[in-house]
Amino acid sequence: MLYTLHRTQKLPASLDTIWSFMNNPKNLAVITPKSMGFITTGGDDREMFAGQIISYTITPLFGIKMNWVTEITHVKDKHFFVDEQRFGPYAFWHHKHFFKEIPGGVEMEDLLHYKLPLGVIGKAVHPILVKPKIEEIFKYREIKLTELFGSFTA
Image 1: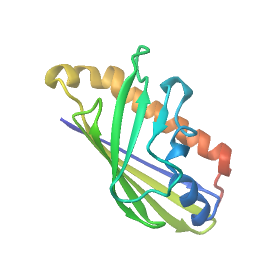
Image 2: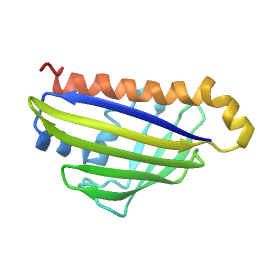
Image 3: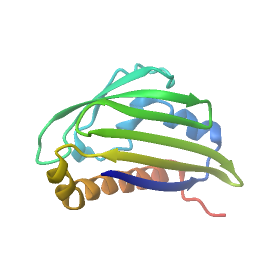
């Protein structure tokens, strides 16, 4: 089964500022909960580019460390980028990040499609473990971005 997560967030900052922050793979650790034990390698301080491989070590559940490798498959400067899992905990992971200048700031939109491995077992653990964890990660990111860039009021 393919699952979808859709989120939007508005921030009171310029498109240049938000893009610059989100476009740096090292900032993923800043907006990921500390409990995930998130370590990034392969981002090497360059702006994201199509073909870029980024490796992570994560500790998503029960203190179990996992390796995760994603590829940035598409980038359109100050508009969007897409990351796809190449190796890791999911059977499928396709995450689109969109950025749009709006009056008073920027609207960021995430569209995530993912599939779990292990068939019926994956389907059974999704509502109990995986979906709540993914939602927790995105909620943390929303809070952290608000701390960094402010609350949007328009």
